[in-house]
Length: 207
Image (cartoon, rainbow, N blue to C red; front, side):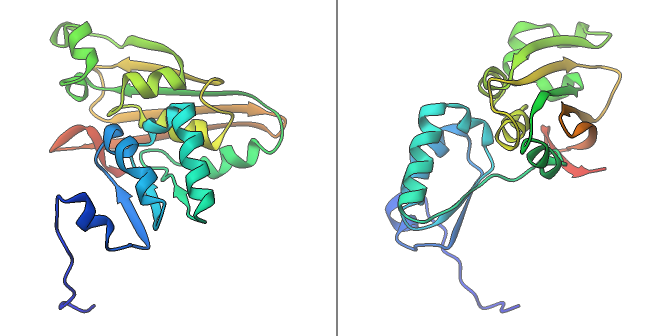
């Protein structure tokens, strides 16, 4: 590795985009995706970490058109879940159900809309705090359920992907369970993530 490589650091968008990077990795949130990604794909491929931002169908179509016009890629990492290749392969035929069940301990929900809606310290057993479709969950929980957006893009879309979200005081990990049924058969995927000590909403590693 060449230790003499100098990497630019800047908060000036014009200076940043003048570099014409091969790839730009976004890790700044939904608003940043909507503000800058169209500009990114003029010259660079983009890896979008804040996948929930793509739950807006008009924005997604616009960004895809921009990327295609400039022969650039929009890359969505699997992030806190695995098995998206299995989901995508199953979607080649008929899929009758894709469901995500996300369970996180109370400490993962501080600083979110759930803290505003529920008294987290008083929750003593698993509590269902959301049941709906992925388009709704990706918007309501931009920092907690980005996985529902990644799952939707790999499978049958935001409108048909079901999501249940729990606050569960009996666990100390973030757990994602995925159920897929279709012409190919059925698949169950479970991922248990150890939360980052610096940000309980996010995983630090996969088990």
